[in-house]
Each structure stands twice: as structure tokens, then as C-alpha cells.
Image (cartoon, rainbow, N blue to C red; front, side, top):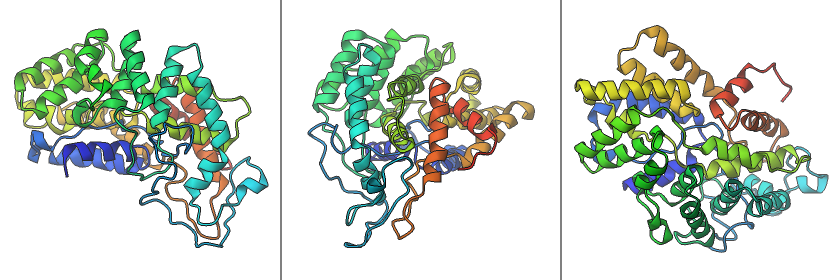
Length: 401
């Protein structure tokens, strides 16, 4: 398996299995000493809980297939056997699946009109960041587990690249990089070649994230000098921002006021599917490994970055990384243990409602959607910080989901 294919797979599944993500991160903490630079791969956000992967079959680029392969998702019910799903606020006629339709295909079909209108509103917005998200949504995938991707030079991706170049807005630029980047953010062929990590760092110099990606890429190329230089810039940065949360919150604010819970959940799913750029996993796997920390200068760099992750990290994965690095750096237990407990508390976080839906007679149940929907509400209310949204969801009074 190539590093590139591993990176793409992590992008697709990043939000579906939060528990698996945390376990993976903890696993990395114990095996990093055995890994080589070639074994690294680009890591998406971890974050975040919500990895959903529901996306529209039509309001997409023409390059996207009309009927993508559902992959390893829920099995189709036998032909001629109609299943009724409790789809939270949708009409009774919409609750019945078509013959041979999976839960995910059913949800995509009945929410198509609202989601399509929402994306159109984003594309026509006078706010350039909202328009950028609308363009990126052209790459969202309607079926979890699908192996299909928008073409490297798809119309939506090309327009997003041009918008990023014209505006030099760090948030738009980061979003475009996430859509164009392959392994360690090597740009895909076509207009994407006009983007670079170096330029992001240039227009956003006090943000640690682009510098960490530059360090990760240099480390994968065994360029220790550049890796150390970039990591030093990350350690001296005052901010940690991938803009994933801010852009998601901005887009959620454009949803119709009376949107049904299911439609809101699907919108959140689409947004999460295009959120591909956060702190690279190479930070704990290699750049700040046990071996790397034997060098005093590197240990100081990693300590500064760990503090930044602990105090400003907005994704669950960044909390996990802060806990791992804090313990590895020898922080007092009272400093790293709360981070560990915080990450442990997310193990029962609401996740993509369709990831474990059954396709049998019982069908899909509304409570799963409502639980996830509450999290999406909190995400919007907290400016896109999944960490804050998850805390609010966990600490909220018990709700009758």
C-alpha cells in the first residue's frame, strides 16, 4: 500500500469511527520508535467526531458518478422487500426505501432537494468563504466507503483553486489545499499545482499548522534540516488553526431555518467529508518520537507545540496528540492526565448515524439522527470547534434520543 492511498483512505473514514481514531493515536504513541519516515502518511483531522460521509448524488460535479459504489457500507435489502426508516421529520412517503436501496442511498435521495438548495445558496453567497465551501462541497461523497474521487481538474476544484489564489485568504487557501493535496499535501495534477504549503505559510506565518505540514513533508523526504527549520517555526507560532471548524460553522449558518434534523445531519456529514487538513500525524509518529526527543532542541520544539495543542487544539485528535506528547515529554501527571481523561470521554461521542445502520426489517431509527443532530447544533454554536461541541454534548442534561 502506498503512502498516498493510505492518506486518501484516512480522509474518507476520518469521522466515521472516532473510537478507532483515538485507539490508533494511542497505538502510535507506543510504536513510533519502530517507524521510518517512509511509513508516514498524511493525517486528516482526526478530529472530529463526526465523520460522516453522506453526500449528494446530484449537486455535485459532473465528474462524480451518478450511482457510486456503496463499498463496504450497509448491504442492500433484497429486491422487492420494502424497508421503512424513521427519518426524523421527513414525510411518511419518504420513509420507505426503494427496492434494493441502502440506508445511505435512501437518505441521500430524500434530502437531495434541501442539500442541493443549500449548496447553491453557498455558491451564490457574497461571502467568499461561504462560496469556497460551496465549491469544495462539489467533492463531497454521498456514500461512505466509496472509492471514487472528483477528478484532479474537476470544475469545482479548479474554481476553488482560482479563488484561493485570487483572495490569498488563509482559510480559503487551506480549504483548497485540503481538496488538492495527496500524500503529505503533494499537489495533484492540474490547476492544483498552483498551490503550495510554502505559500500558505507565507500568508499565514504565525499559524503553526502550515509549518507542521512543511516539517512533516520534509521529514518524509529525509530532509532533516528543513524539517527542523519548519518545526522551529511551528514551535514559535502563536496560533493553531486549520480553519476547518470556522469554515464548517460558516456553512452551517447558511442552512434554511426550518431544516429537518435529518437534513441538518447530512449537511454536517458533507462538511466533515471535505475537512481534510489538520495537524499531521507525523508530529507524534516521527517528528516528536521518543528518539527525536533525545535531542534537546527538538524536545523544546515539541514541548511548545504540545502546549499549543493542549490550549488551542479544537479537534479531538489534537487533544489526543497533546496527551500523548505531554506524557512522552515528561509533563507532571496533573498536566497531561486531564487531557488523557478528556480524550477518553470522547469514546462514546455521537458519530455518523449511518455508519452502523442495519438494512433489515427494523430499518433506520430517528434517535441516532437526533443525537448526532444535537452535536451539529453545538458545533455551529461553538464556532466549529468540535472539542467545545463535544464537551457541551457530553455535559448536557440527558436527552430523550
